[in-house]
Image (tube, rainbow, N blue to C red; front, side):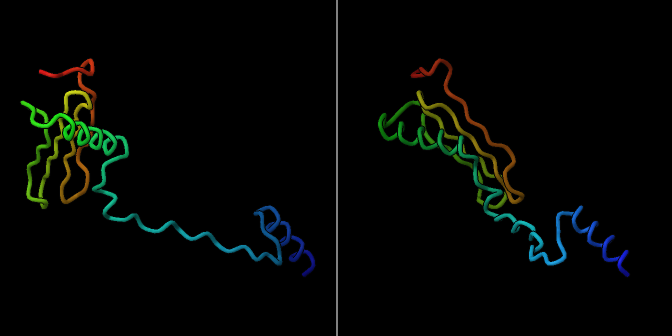
Length: 112
């Protein structure tokens, strides 16, 4: 019996526990928020905000603006364009994010 207690104590010590341990088992992380699957990454959100701000400053423009296609259920495309701030695009659908990317305009000066 003494040998069993000593052996059990050694095993507990090797595993980082103790006989009187009050440590609790770690719970698994909570499941992800389903809305997170549709949210664009921070870099794309930042570029979209920069584009929106530029569009507010420049007013009417030949090609700059925000374009979208989709009904909110299937594939949905959002494309934001501005001469200085660049391009941001998202393609989402019922399964979450399909594609998202953003780019500066070539040379940062695409007025025409």
